[in-house]
Length: 237
Image (cartoon, rainbow, N blue to C red):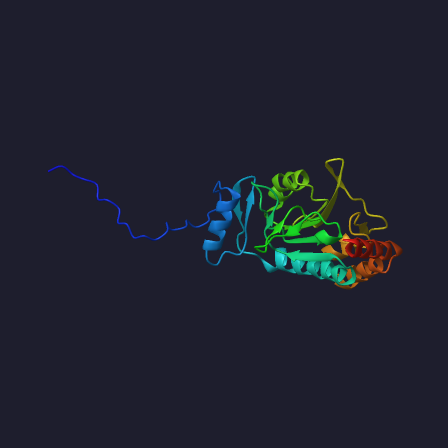
């Protein structure tokens, strides 16, 4: 008797969506489709067409630092019109890259920002500031992701290297990332005027000092001028 292959049963239903797996090589469209179809997934990124997925997140290495950064970003956002803060959301940068930075801060498109909120709720385009809390991810954050952010025009990139107890803040100049240098121990954003950071205080968890420095920046003349310029752009749009 000749063996015959058993034909597949036609059910009329759509093909099952495969789960998202680390190391998958996908288009951005397929990445989003599998992300949405993978239950319980908290964080996955498409970097240069390759899927990266987070392991279990520790409180000391990620939870505390992330919350402290968000507190400072939130305080600045409250005091600054046209500025929005993004917490751990996917951002469509290009066809091969959809990172999920730990935090980002953007200027609304109506006020001159480069990104926009798409009809389906995703951010498209480069945020003005991307933030990564880097523990085990420091290698990709300071190499592959660093180049992706730079190429796509993310104007500032902040990496908190938790194990190294160090914070790197880069600003985009002439197509290259240049490290910001602290003045009297304080880092000052060149994009978000008045957004000041005391890296030493933040690293040691001294939020009283970090918050005081943040408020000094918000109370500065440069922040007042920035707010005025943002309002003028918004009103003339």
